[in-house]
Length: 88
Image 1: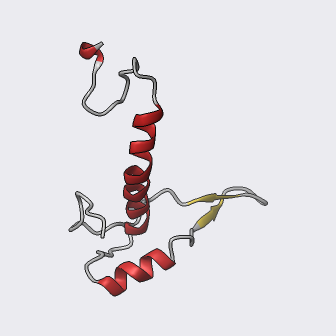
Image 2: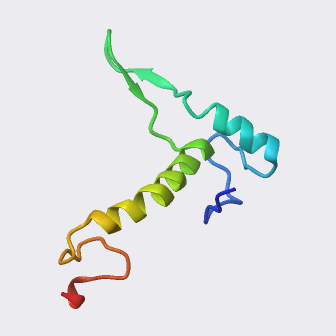
């Protein structure tokens, strides 16, 4: 499974993904979100990250980072891996 730097730190939901069953159940439940009402007819998503949220962020990073690096401008050095303004 995906290694997360803070893998031993529980999220706001007090969960740690340490067994395959918990990991697989978390993947199944990734689409569930908590929404708080902020007006009579509108709701906004709760902004506190859970283990599920951090897992999805890690997955997105692993998938999208190579795509972004290959499609980015060759002369762009802003927020690029192993590049900085001093390299330009």
